[in-house]
Image 1 (cartoon, rainbow, N blue to C red):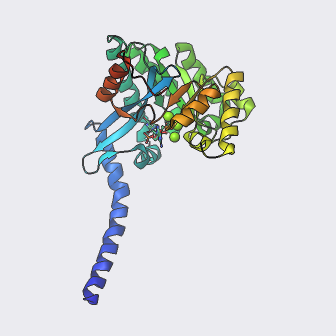
Image 2 (image 1 turned 180 degrees about the vertical axis):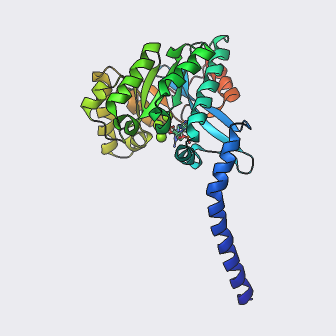
Image 3 (image 1 turned 120 degrees about the horizontal axis):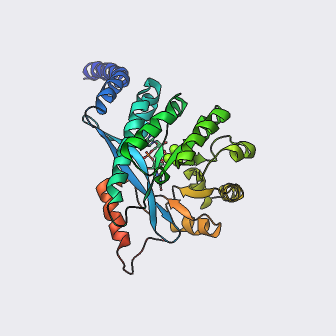
Length: 287
Ligand code: C2E
Ligand code: MG
Ligand code: MG
Ligand code: MG
C-alpha cells in the first residue's frame, strides 16, 4: 500500500543519512586498522620508453578493505590527508617499494627498474620529511637513484624556498623528482626553473584532449618545449590510444604511461608483463 511504501521510503532515507555519517567515521576507524592489519597493497603501472622497453613503474596505492573490497585512492586518500594518517601510510609505501627494489636487484632484467612514488602534501610539509626518507633509504640500502618522488605543483608552490631545500638534500643522495599532473596547477616558468626537477609528467587530461581538440595539442607542445629548455625529461600519463602515442612521439615526448601499455597491477602480474615483453618475439609493446 501507499502508506506502507511511504513509511519504507522514510525509513530508507533515515538509514541512508545514518550510513553517510557512519561512513566518514567508520572510514577513519577502519583506516587506522589498515596498516597494522596489512590491508594496503601496491599496484605497479609500467612506464615505457619509445623503444617499447618498460623502464620502470609508478607505484599506486590500493586498500583491500575487508567490507568494501579493493578501494581506490580517491576514496580514502583525502581522509588520510585530513587525519594525518597519510604520513604513516606514505612511509609504509616507501618502505615496501624499497623492499621490492631489493628483491629485484637480484633478478635479471629487473635490477635496473625505476619506481615512481607519490608523495602527499601533508607528508612533504613534515619538518622531518627529508630525514624520514633518508632513514628508509639507509635502513633498506636501496640505491636512491632508482626512486623518483612525485610532487604536485600546489605542494611545491606553497613554499618554494622550503621545497627547494628539501628537494636538494634528497637530490644529493641521488633521489629524482617528478612534477605530477603537470599543467593543472599554476607554476610559472621562473618557479619551475628554480626547482631541481628531473621530470615533468603531462597530466592525463591534456593527453585525452590531443585526440579531440587543438587546445590540448598546444598545451602538450608547450609542456614538451618547456621540459626540453629546462633540461627535464617529459612523460605523458594517461596514454590510451595509438593515435595519442604517435602524436606524442612526433612531438618528441618519448616516455609514456597509460592503459595502452598496461593498467596498474599487482606486483606478480607486473613481473609477468615484464617477462612477457622481454621475451624475444614478433610481438612487442604497442610502440
Ligand atoms: P596520479 O599519481 O596522477 O596517478 C595516475 C592515475 O591515473 C592512477 O589512478 C592511474 O591508475 C590512472 N591512470 C593511469 N593510466 C591511465 C589511463 O590510461 N587512463 C586513465 N583514465 N587513467 C589512468 P589511481 O591509481 O586511482 O590513483 C589516483 C591518485 O591517487 C594518483 O594520481 C595519486 O595522486 C594518488 N595516489 C596513488 N597512490 C598514492 C600513494 O601511494 N600516495 C599518495 N600520497 N597518493 C597516491
Ligand atoms: Mg603520480
Ligand atoms: Mg598524475
Ligand atoms: Mg593525479
